Image (cartoon, rainbow, N blue to C red; front, side, top):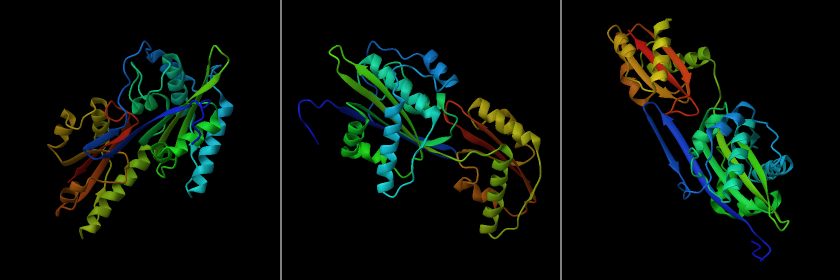
Length: 307
């Protein structure tokens, strides 16, 4: 690594991973919030970017952003990995954060007044993400920024994470009074899950139900339509919790399984005893996709009734 006095670069690493299974969710975060500064990130600015993610703020350098994408994908190709796809929503989040660092005059993954990374991304992207990560840097240009990030093991790990398939990039100029030009660089990574219509999600859940029964040497159940199951699923999403009154009412007539998932075709492990039970004849599926405080980038709220 070049350490000559003329070189000025710095970077930080932060990773957030969200792995959700029915009735369970957890996250891991790298560096904590930066010390308080005079900078206050505003929700109004975030809302403006969300409404128009391609606003051409004069400070943003789209050429350097494109070069960073090309360099990242070249490195991934050399490692035998799939390329990252640029997402306009994630780029909006990256540009917003780069601009916030410029205003604050410091590198940080969470400036005073800013939401956590997962929440920042959820505001501006329509993607459903189950993993997020971020690199931030301060360097002379895109090429040197990429080189220095690749020389740092944790930053390299983000760039070459095989799970990541989407990225957002933000580059903002910091022009000093002496004419020196530096760049604040933000790379927001994510693993985007496939999206499904409500009908597709319910079909996948229904297939998983009968697949679980076959694995238990039980016959398939007849699927029937139960509109109140969909209504109950959406009520859970609105309440952001599983235990609500409409579920209790359903449980007076049926055996009811409720859970949340990021992958519609994946059932809770502990559901097998109920689903594989003898004497069952039919079932119904209710599902509602929603973004909530608990699931900032979205999850499926599911109700399965058994009788």
